[in-house]
Length: 134
Image (cartoon, rainbow, N blue to C red; front, side, top):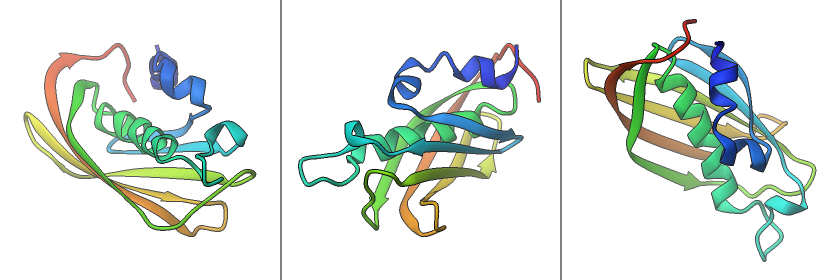
């Protein structure tokens, strides 16, 4: 099984349109094309859509070592609005990895490279082997 196949099992992210486009050890990049379904009442991208995009990038980067990892805490800061027609990217970078914990920073940018949101998360590395290797 490839990492891409494994993360297709994240049905919620898949149904929202999030797709993984790159996975390397300690790094991943995901994409979401914003449609009407992603908007809030103010006609901007709903915060939950941005969180889901960043969260899938986090999951791919944190699990890239082949060890099952779960988020312990996550924080998102919204910096700029986006809307229909925007393509958003989440790039997750590993900042620390230990035996049982890890820490990740994720930048969400638009198609112009403008920073839309920042996302930070710590993870628990459970230790169970995953059915893929990079």
